[in-house]
Image 1 (cartoon, one colour):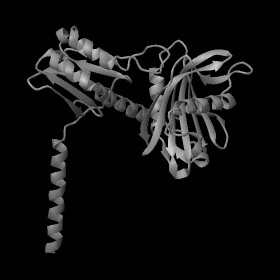
Image 2 (tube, rainbow, N blue to C red):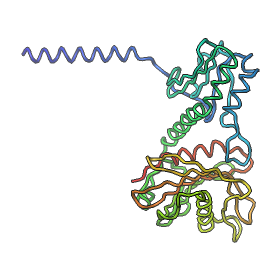
Image 3 (cartoon, rainbow, N blue to C red):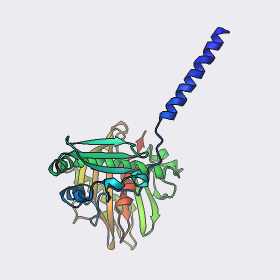
Image 4 (cartoon, one colour):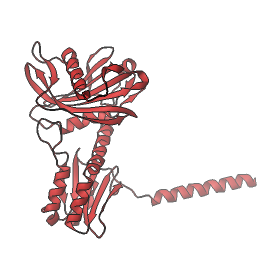
Length: 325
């Protein structure tokens, strides 16, 4: 009987402690805001001067790989005195503070959830500008990762139900059910979604492991492969037309990691041979050594006369959800 009473007492104590901890937790509303938008909290006189110029040179710099200049982020300035209530709920916030110590802080879920707040501080305008310039890559990467995760979260509300991609290629990708399979073979998929002025597109295919060799010509190898794929699978609107890489725009290649695997990331512009069509692409060649192959996943947008930044972010967020068996 004593053991039973002791057990009941301990359970009551644990529950009361948990309730107390929960009551002490800060309630945070859901973060909001348009994709790729950043709230900049700083005084008007700083925004209108050199600090504002430095912020714009970081956050609004043109994105490489788009046919027309588009800013990395759309930014809106908010004076510190009016930064309260609803305006604090944006997912991404950059705060500028003049104080003795110069530096940068990256904070999670300060006013809403999920949220990243980056605080840049310094005792002078020069000190703040220096911190901004030295941490440009970190600031952009932090905010972009938030937006990629948000786009993935939005698409997860209505996920696709295709099983054939996993069955044929041994991989999974997370994208919305509004995408459809436009073309497929045993080792190739073309997936697309209708948008207001065109389509958002994905290509998924595999290559033999010796198809891409790590040397100084790797970007040329990747472009040659994507052009051959385009000729076979991505036909244009007139007979004999097909997708190729725009050779007047030099592709940009870098290396990264996806699904714990080495990846070549290539950005450039595509067009259609013998037809007036084109747009941006982002190509990921994933080194799948375990399965003795390369997996290539490419996103490309056709959206004439409108901005393409957010369409490309969506495609990148899909590609970065890849998991290879």
